[in-house]
Length: 430
Image 1: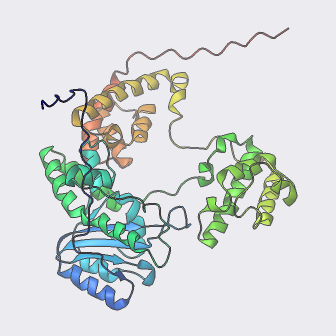
Image 2 (image 1 turned 180 degrees about the horizontal axis):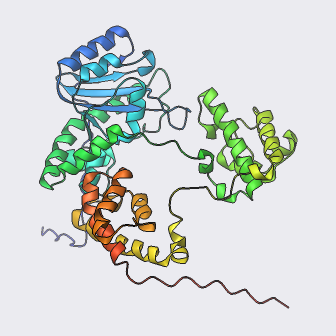
Image 3 (image 1 turned 30 degrees about the vertical axis):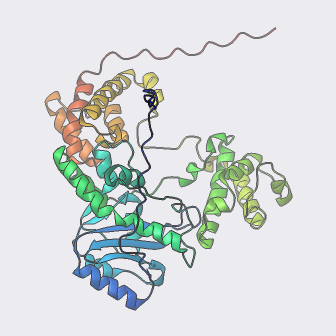
């Protein structure tokens, strides 16, 4: 029997990558002093960098504290530590000493690890390293599949890690997150060296260790749908409701949106009902805490109605930065031309260096310098721009690459685009 030739149009799908499994089995939860002492001794006797991860209860709890900490070190194996059982983990931090931490998306985990006394002195961030190397997708599961050739389950990533006891499948998922960090680091270190980006990564990692994000200005303005608030009085009501909800959520250690969602805040702020009954009848006002904390919501709305005009929040958030980019052409056509010229050059540089544009330089930094360039002699421009970028916390490798592009855009901005003509009024209908 003659076999039919394969259809050239049919492309066989690659078989799925084998599932990543634990090499040493599932370690027990460390929630006693004796168990922690044993882990501390093992980590101190281990060698090389330490893979670390933390699980929070985002979406369930108000705080961003760690409810589980996973670590792995050569010679020490893996450990799953319940930080809630201890006042702090200072002894573990001392055992790690100056060994390098390996984290994935370190900026998410470092704050909650600091809270329990774990503070890195050296760092390798596998996600950030992958970004610098131009990997198109940098999630841990994707990198493990691409680099290690194994697949990972991610079904427990959004679980409520404050739950006790933690189910075994969750613990296995958590242990696997540190299982491959050492192997990922080895591959990424080699690729950074080969691409000439080792120094870039070193500076980025040092910045992560030292960086402390500034407190958010007017955090209530991050309420989803706030653009639907009808005027300054409604904005004042959003602020009052947000503040009350935030304090209640902190006291209850629950996510604010689980009391009343943002949509309910906006609905109540626009309606400004004068009683609990009217508030509960307001379309869109709902949530687990809508009726339970009704008096608190009514009091907040009462305060908003009583605010004098000069205490109402402005429609637009005050900022020390440049205006929205969409308004540049009208407000300063030359600045808009500078930005367009710089953007084109940065895009070309990013493609040639195989790195995302946003990793070359924080976009806000470039906008600030281009909106209001240093007022210095041309011969001093490069040094002045470099100094401004440094003041904004740009890393030296970014300054070295970006300063020439920004200065060129300042010196030769190109032809400004004409400002948009104001819309002509529509004729009155008869």
